Length: 185
Image (tube, rainbow, N blue to C red; front, side, top):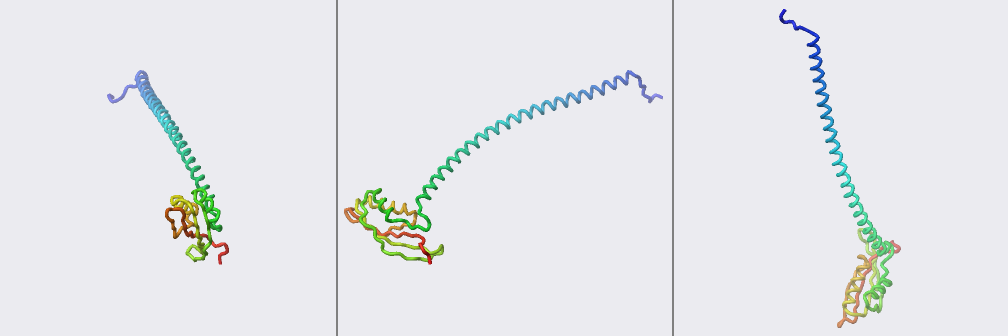
């Protein structure tokens, strides 16, 4: 019986020690890998936290910039809304005309109503009223007055037939004011 393995207590002890050593080597290796993974995870967390804080700072700065822009737009919108007449209210050429004359340093001699008409458009009925204006002042001031009148009307005032007399001491113009009719039929 040569093929038989002789089992002795010393052999059993050596096999047990070798198995225990192998088991401990696996445990030490696993512990080392876990420690390295934990260190990598901690490093990654630090990088993520730094990136997050940088991103938050950039986002907060951008939000502040956008809030400033929004405030500017809201202010501009409010001023435009305040300047524009109500939809049912036509442009008051008498009061606006006098205020713009003072602003542009011309004398407003007269404003007279020439007539009005209703027009049916795809957007609805529109009333156009024609006025004749006579001004006195330098040519540049008359031109500035006409531009101011157009700007103040926000597209609802259309100056026509402008005449500036040489040497520029007076000017005359017709203005057409568009509005919604007060009592549409």
